Image (tube, rainbow, N blue to C red; front, side, top):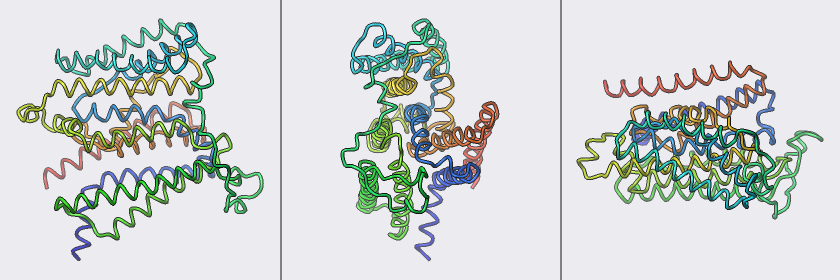
Amino acid sequence: MNALNEIKELFGKNMRQYGIMLALVVILLVFAFSTQGRIIIPNNMWTLIQQNAYVLILALGMLMVIIAGHIDLSVGSVVAFIGAIVGYMMYTWHVPWMLAVLCGLVLGVIVGAWHGFWVAYVRIPAFVVTLAGMLLFRGLAQVIAARTMAGFPAGFNAIAGGSLPNFLGFVPNPLAGLFGEGSPFGVSLDGVTLAIGAFAIFGMIMQSWRSRLSQIKHGLMVGPMSLLIGRWILLGLAIAFVTYILSMNTIGGTPIVLILVAVLILSYAFVTTRTVFGRHVYAIGGNRNAALLSGINTARVDFGIFINMGLLTAIAAIVTTSRSGASIAAAGTGYELDAIAACFIGGTAVTGGVGRVAGAMVGALIMGVLNMGLSILSVDANWTMAIKGLVLLIAVTIDLVSKRRATIG
């Protein structure tokens, strides 16, 4: 009975997180059924990652911005501006692509510092500052990329369009006979992708085990071991499924951009939960006045948050430009809305102070699956936008209603 109560308490604390993950699984199953499995064929899964990498990257930065009680409306325009600068350097000045990428990252930090200065030290609301930035950098992007620039080096295009080299060879597909000859599921499996998937499962188990030991060491409540093993099984099966699908991709093996995104996710999960800066961000979002009175330099933290957002926006700009193979003034249109929606759908509180990297990533994946699933079903783009808007409204409503019930309770 005690174990049952512990499980209920643990699930109660994380109910929103589990609910979002369940929603993603349900949405994926619905589209898998309605599209007759087309959404989960290897090449479409590869495309899903490639097309939504920018949302995952921007959501990491937007998460910290929203947790601290701010908002950034400029990221779409900054993506276009930095993409135009990087493209111009390679196309007109013939700068080596690695140097152009480095300059783009530095420019992103400068843009973030520009926004951070006005928000943190002049104390102009972030909404106003980034709204001005949205107009400013979109205008600059249109001036720089007045005409489309294309024909970039292959190394640059591989950032978003390439795969890791298959130096481990191919492995026979044990389930190939179930799908029949000529099926996209009947090809051999990429060895590198399988190795990465196995490492991911091992890393997940080790991280959760170390976390459990740390909780026990500090006298915190932990759930029964059976619950942890069940979590390992579920997450392990999810990772194994994605690994299996990607390893059958006929375009290539593991996308390079997936490795980039995975490294960023792990890094920011660590920053938000294990560093002083991350704890300060949550403290400021929870109660800015209390954080200030406790000795936190709120201006410096705000400045750092926007520098971080600028850096991640630059990375998203490079990925976007690499994927399209061209610099265009209209790039990044609506990106800020996708990033904000991903955070809110993933459980980030509208009022700040609450949010997790895992939730924001699941929110971004929900948006991506909706986009691809509705596209495969040939749903009009206008209806797709309307459906995404309803999903966002429902997610925010659930968050606010659950908080009110908790307050009343």
